[in-house]
Amino acid sequence: MTWSRRLCSILLLAFWLCLLFFPEHPAAHGVIASLALAAAAAAAVAEAVSARPIRWQRGAALSVWPYLVYAAMLTIAWIAHFTDASTQEYVRQLCFLATVWAVARGARGDTARWVVAVIVGLALIVVQILGPHSVLDALGRPLHYRSIQQWSGYPEIGLLASIGGSACLAIALADRRWRVRAASLLLALGFAAATIYLLSRFSLITIVIAGAWMAIVAALAMRARFAMILLACGVLGAIGLVLLRADFADRLRAVFVDRSAAVEIRSEGWRIAEAMMRDHPLVGVGPGRFREESVHYVSSGTGDRLHAYNLVLHEGAELGYLGLAAYLAMWARVLWHTLRTVRASERTMDGVAALAAHGMLVAFLVRSQSEHFLANLDASFRMLLLLAFLFGLAESAGRRRDY
Image 1 (spheres, rainbow, N blue to C red):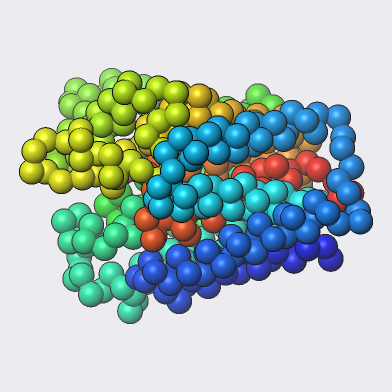
Image 2: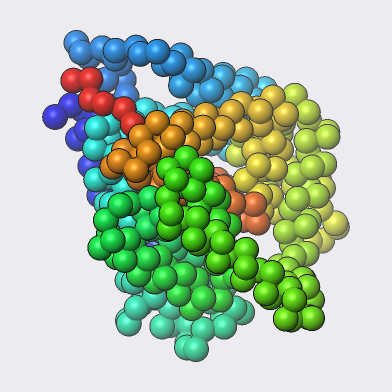
């Protein structure tokens, strides 16, 4: 077993342990995740200088250049805004890239097993947090949005449920075995029930959007009949709701407008990020400096803002348009790679694993349009580690072991 394969196990184990045993202690997550990320950087260096070099295959340069360009733009933005906050975020992002490298190498040839491990871990975490004697019991039940939002981990639980539900839907759509399909559907329903229990409508919407997209992919790339049936039922159901419910449009609009406080704070975060991008188009305000710069863009007396409530706008504000383009290129690269693997592998184990990894990344990206889980906060270390692991799994999809 190589360094990267050992690290792949250590990273996932550290992530699950810190969430299972320290769900309400973000500081503990930061310590554990920091150690894991530091180990990822060390393992990446060890792999690079090992006696068994990487075998460059066709398209290898295409798979590497988006990450290299992002690292270069990140470095330029860090040099242009050299502060303690920017240095901390710069190191975090470099460790993120190292973790992607290590996991992609370590999971190669066993992507399906690691996808299953991620789903099982997500299920255990959601059950542990929402089950009896959990941290939420201290807030009182039945749960209400105003009470549950007092715990800073509330949006993250919804994100984890969205990722798990999307992965299970992908397996149910693509796998040929009916037993596996049935088990995946039950797990997907469980994750969806968790978002309802949390009153997290955006997390539930994320599962629906990601599921619809994966059904389209499975129907076109894999010719999966089950996906075609679900798509047909979804279209007929949507048409039926529109025809039978005259107030359907009003109810759908109420999903987004009945939380005036939530909508207002997110709108302000988006406005601040857009203003920062206009004022600093080339290199942004610097990595990790959104909070300290936001005081110049908010109304008097309202204080600063932790983040932009949007993953894309936050990256653009901190790194500028060029850095944002490099960041989006990484996302485009990994999403396109999984789609190509799905099309090439079809309904084999590799194809199912690639669709599951693709679905998890789509869920993360969609849910991050109204929340930012990777801001430079203590609780964001665990989400950064999770995203790096998902990126690595996606990069390993469809690739054979070369050692």
